Length: 224
Image (tube, rainbow, N blue to C red; front, side):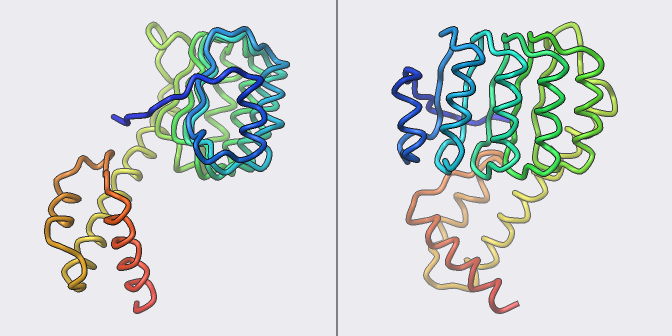
């Protein structure tokens, strides 16, 4: 999956009040190798309670353990915005991994979770295999060291299934867009061509194009 993300490196003490305020300009927070530990992760989790703006959280190499992971898992249970969570290079064990896994049972937003280079064993891995049976949105999961250990077959099959579902959903959305465009004179042909040309993972539309698309899609929904 190729996705361009513009991460913002913001100190913890600045990030917390901005998250509490649901700052719409803070969409991808990058705090790496700052030693925030469980205490910092808990502060971030508390601040994320009502946040609907943050889509990416990068917390690699911060000495975050099971307590911090558990509190972040609580956020995932209710979050409809967070799509990327990077927790590699911390000290999360099977307990914290299990809490994160359980949080994904009902999560409909998170696409990417990186837990490489933590302290997750077979028990934590099995929790993911069990919890993700009904999850259809997680398309990238990294555990262990990412080099010498790949995902167990059953867990890998789940991720591959979700990737296929994601591609099919994007393809279907493109087809709906193209159909709407041919039925609506307000949608220029060049927008249709632009969407059809784009990669299935990377549909980039301008605000005006997106507005036209959503209006057309809404009209289609109301008339079918």
